[in-house]
Image 1 (cartoon, rainbow, N blue to C red):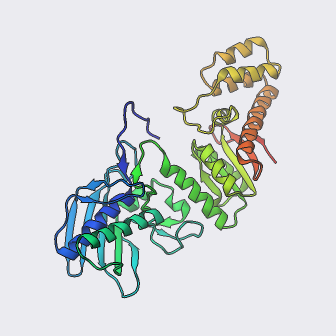
Image 2: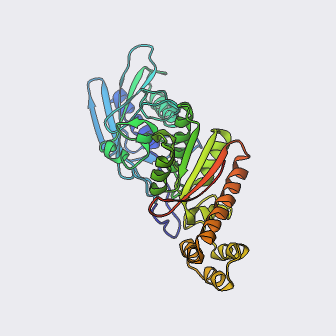
Image 3: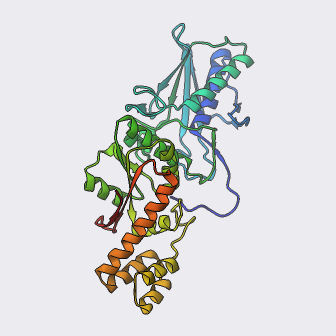
Length: 367
């Protein structure tokens, strides 16, 4: 994750908001032959942003407009992408029909808010795209509740999707059109947490009882090999252990393995539910006190208290001998598990698996 810059950060607009604005501009052009530029839309919380058009095309019975996404100061993978909306008449009685154009994915697995086979245009954006079309009809004296086909495209979206979790969620061919509120809050990490939630939904829908949530790629690969888990059972949790656990509290599974390195699990053991380095730190003094409780010599305890990180403390424990190293790892695993169990209120059986930098299992605590 990119480092959050200092100072006041500029908000941006979701792909859904850009798609809605492009759809309104295209429909107004279909009704009048003229593209409104800039174009305004209304969002769920009452905002009415205006968007400049980046492209326009019109033909017999169809019109298309494009808007370049501005994600503000958020390191959004789709910042700068062109979001296109093409509007054309649909078959009588079909209402509003959404289609995935180039660069927009298609849902292939159950468990998401959309059924398999549907274009990956989420319910929130579908709702305010509908509002945008209604507003265009009102302004241009168009028919109410017209039968329309809305095709959203994102050129280059298939390549951008490789940087997201869409493939794991069963969304193939491109990006998802997202945005519950239409607004991107810089460094809110909303898209990552959204992917965690949808990953849990997909796994539950597939009947998977054992999930593994990992803090990174090394621990994910290791825990997958340890249990022979299918890809759908793997949750790319990153630093968002709190967001993962809180969602599982309302959407439980039988068993959850939390997988990560010693330092990340030491943060969780201390009660931190956000493991990012900018929002939580390893307290080496607390680790030193754990070594003291385990009977470590005072010199080693002092060295641990002055250490610069959890890895150095673990190295000190290792030098004291395998029993000290194993006991420290086991204590961190047990404390991390207690924090997770308290967050989940006991509805899911929790295991904590701790791996070294090479993916070797060095400790495991759980059912």
